Structures are given as structure tokens and as C-alpha cells.
Image (tube, rainbow, N blue to C red):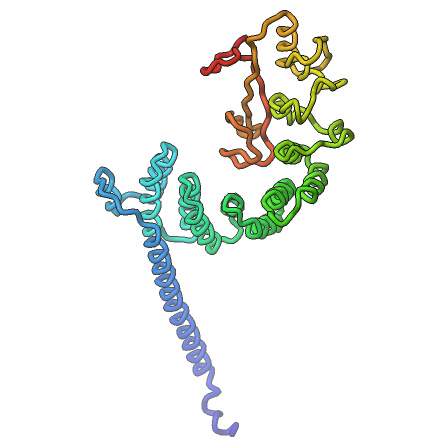
Length: 347
């Protein structure tokens, strides 16, 4: 048998075979790349068709049809529409850009922005689909994972949100606060738990994170449950000043407070005689002094600032509506004229 291949031991024959193999491999790789590229293009087009919006407006349609406009310009235009609140136009432009864009990096960038636009517009289910498509192209996209967590959280799909948090944790992201907050949401919404079990679970979690003490306080207040004296004394009242101010006297009698912020609030409300307290909250101190001098048409107004992005909101938040930070709300108070609908500052 070996004698049969003697004539093929010529070195030229080996070189020819080598080049033939290289050619076959290169040819196969080329057509495999073409096939995968076409498959990905078809997948993107199919994906885009699910979200296309039918609109009769013509002011920007011709502009979008111009293939000479760079993808970067389309992205900037979409971003401008998104910031102005015209989400429909922003979405349309992102979908057009998605059809034309090439390369995984640019595609995942467009998908991330498209997902955020759907999120801001309130289309949470569509937003989750877009973020999942973005993660299919680039699984380590922390921004998409962060938004996907919030989407699942707002859709009350807490199990899915926990899975996404686990993925973020694998990328060395700090998610301890978010995990505890998610546990609080699950406990609060669990209809199978009794109020007693909810109280114990919320109390245990509040020991781990100060900002979650508010959830415990809110639960006890809403269900008219008495807070144990030792627990009440250990609460961080600076995170609860607005709740304490509006608390029903039949549930929480501040006139019996002996020290600290509770006593200062009682003086500001005129429940007990005013006296100067060192290192107290300025607004409560001024209001207490005014009540002592007979000024009764003064009240407090509360607003809430995010310590991360510095945006201010009229309602308390556990997660900032703008930057999505957890536990970043800082309570700020100001003295206003009582019963004033326009809320004009008193001082």
C-alpha cells in the first residue's frame, strides 16, 4: 500500500495540498460570514418590524430616507427628540438607524438608547424586549442590565429582577441596597404573609439599611400598628421627618416625646412648650419659636432631593426617577404660609 503513494511524496504535491486546504477553509469562512451577516440582518429587520410606529407626519420622513446621513447624526437627532419628550419621533429614528447600522458595538448602542426611550415613554414591556436584544449582542452591557432591573421591578416581576441583579453582581457591580429594596417590595406585595410576619421581616431588613426604616414605618402607619418603644427610639428620624409631621396623633402621640427630633416636632406643632434644642432641625426650631410667639398661620412644606443627580421632587422616592439611584432621597423642609394653595414660602 505504501508503494502506491511513493510517487506522491514529491514536496510540490504537499504544497499544492496545503494551498488547497487553505483555499477551502478561507472559502468556507467567507460564505459562513456572509450567511451569518445576512442572518443577523434579517433578525434585526424582523425585530424592528415589531416596534415600527405608523405616522402620517412628513416633516422628518424624507430626512430619514436619505441614506447619506451618518448613523451618528441620526442618533443625535433621536436623542434630541427624546430629551424634548417627543418619544414617538425618537423611537422612529432609532428604528431607522437600527436597520442601517453595522457592527455589534453600534447596534447595541442604538438598542440601549431605544430601550431607554421606551422606558421613559412608559412602554415597559417593549423596553424589556429591546434591552434583552441588546444583551444578546453584548451580555456584559451594565447599563442595559441596570435598566432591565428597574423595568422588571416596575412590572412587579421580582424574580426576574433578582436574576438580573445576580448578573450585575457577577460584573462586580454593587447591588446590596437594590437586593434589600427588592426584598422589601416582595414582602410588601406578598398577600400570603400576615401583617405580623411582614412587620418582622421589614423590621429585620430595616436593621441592615437605614433608608429602608421608612418602609417599616410606613407599613406600621398604614396598618395602624404600634411601634415598640425600643424600636421607635432607635429609628433614624431624619429620614422620617415628613411622616412624623403628618402622623395622626391618635396613632403616634408626639406630646409624650422626651427628647430629640420627636420632641422638636411636637414643639413645632404646638403640642408642648417650646424650648431651644441644640443641633436640631432649623425649620422645626423656627416654627416652634413662631408658635411660641403666637404665629399660627405657619406650616411646613417638604420636598425631596436626590443626593446623586441633585434633582428635586415633590414626592418621596426610594429610587430616583432620573438617575435610578437607590436610597438617595434627602428630605428638605421649608416654612410656608398655612393653607396657602400656591405654597409661597413664609420666610
